[in-house]
Image (tube, rainbow, N blue to C red; front, side):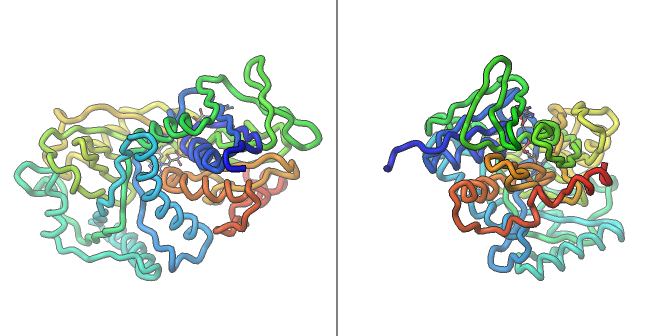
Length: 394
Ligand SMILES: Cc1cc2nc3c(=O)[nH]c(=O)nc-3n(C[C@H](O)[C@H](O)[C@H](O)COP(=O)(O)OP(=O)(O)OC[C@H]3O[C@@H](n4cnc5c(N)ncnc54)[C@H](O)[C@@H]3O)c2cc1C
């Protein structure tokens, strides 16, 4: 029947992965409850930069490449869909990406990326130093990029037109609003959820004095998932990896619409259309400590401000940090948990969770529907970590 709500589905963890899954399942008429201990999307999903790297569906071979390519296609569709449903523009735009390298090591690393793009038919273009400076011109009122004398001009620069971005905080707001209008039961600030188990299956989720029961359960709690699912007897090793970001606001950035993402090794600048520019990000293994540190922020700022005079003390706004959910082998955990029959996991997307959120939601909803999957989930199976491996990893 068209409007009949089916299968009560409880999702624990309201970051971008949980929200995307709730949205996709609600579109498919599932009766969805989404539980979040704090505010929706307030953790890594808010803290991230919103870069959507280039992909190519036709040449994608490895399931990770397929998931990436499906996710990219869906971002374009979801941006329109969400705007239509909620009136919120999530800032999705194909802004392109400039990749620069200066030292010999950086050049070698960039050549590695170039070979990968070549083999995957991902369009790119080699730029000379002058053209590269022009792409950075939005960072200088005099129309020039790279603060002369502060930093050397790139030895190698590549232009990648397929790189995109979206404003993840706005996207999260759109997902929350869309879930509301599709009838998802949303509980934020619910407190810490705990899994109740009976005969290897999930019997319910306890939140304070309440017990929430469903036909099936999805765990999307980012780096906290390892702890959350322990009562099921399943070990999924996870590592929170902190990333810090510095935020600038350039009033003169009149045409943020045309400004590209700038990639320089592991660092990047992401110019938003409203004149904000994000400079990120650190990669630190410091446990669940989500604070910013003066030294790392100073270093990020030193780098960002070397790229153009428009980024300076006066335009610096603030900094923040988030915890990326990393797994032991770099692949996310997607699929059924143990022999539960009613529990699934979707987490561990590390540096790519904003990008992979759309594809993850659709693939897991297909799994719930019992449909043929567009991605081979075997490399992502939580079962790849046996208890034996897990004890070696820990
Ligand atoms: C600095 C930085 C930059 C990044 N840049 C990008 C980028 O440009 N592109 C990209 O694709 N990715 C990027 N990422 C990665 C991306 O942000 C993450 O992979 C993604 O947000 C993970 O989403 P998530 O929903 O799995 O986790 P989270 O956002 O951490 O959400 C998990 C949620 O579960 C909740 N939770 C935990 N335990 C419980 C419990 N017991 N009960 C109830 N709720 C619980 C938490 O409160 C949290 O809200 C970046 C990350 C960082 C930190």
